[in-house]
Length: 411
Image (tube, rainbow, N blue to C red; front, top):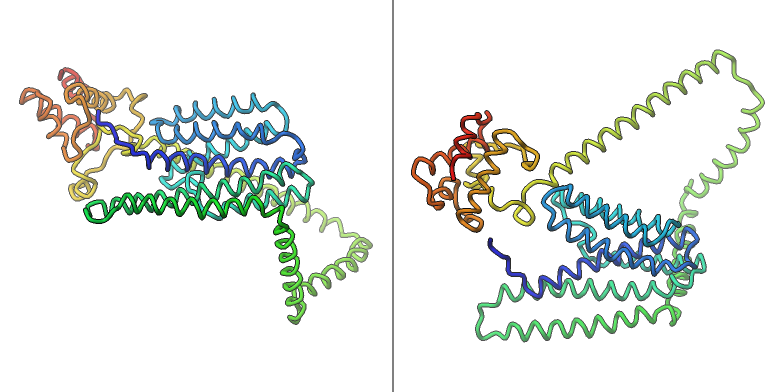
């Protein structure tokens, strides 16, 4: 099998993305712990359990070829972390954060979109700022101390990730220029990045001790006062309307309570209330149905073959553009492990024989006929091997039992 050459820079990018996901999950977990009144407990120690959970889900999302593999890893990681954290509130929130991470990776893999736990961006620093002010609001000293450190670490990770991507793009673009000291320039760029980022991270850690947080709070209060003053300048402003509406509601309530509605009107109210409950229950059931259907479709897409995590043997060419031109449509059965039909057995036999004969994945430009020509088969077997497989993969009708037996006899 062909092995991918992974550079040190790619390994570093993977580790930084993994650390980004952990820091985001830990910051959200810390905010929840402080709000729920457990900021004085050792939530930092239990928060470390999110690192193996995030790392395991990160790797499972990349390497798992079936949903059940990803599901087993997720259950073991989340269950183990909850058991270690304990059955208290902090343990429950560890489990909830693990479930959020597992669903995020699952959704990203199924929808073929980047996962928010794998994309470092600067706005996530706002969570650490929120954690700091929550620590002051609920008098949680631990949160006040760790929030600047988390912000500084995340700032370094985000800067380093962006720098590595830029350096990688720079090296690929200018590597062919012999007179340009490409690698030396890359090292100088990274050195400057570390110096500037280190100074900025140090300033972020020292900011609470220099009183910068008080300046931010005073600026927020001043902005709020300015906005309220501007609203009062507007005729019929929302502030005035809110006050008038409150007074009118207070005056109308006694008058409404003094009168009693007729029995026919009360019966109408009950009937409308019943209709409202029926509509509400119907909407809830419809939402549940739509959510379950969407999750099932995501589950099916999770198992689709891709170049990164899927089966690289059963790859039909010509490419999709040529398939569309020839009106060829691939059959949507991707769960070959459980597929005992004639088509499923033919496709599994095809993959097995290709691996046995070629000892590696076929070339990306080979059609099934070209692949069969490289397997040292007899002429009749070579033609049947390609034609039967193409019928099993493309044809609207399924293969017969005789075709399946003919395919299985090809050794």
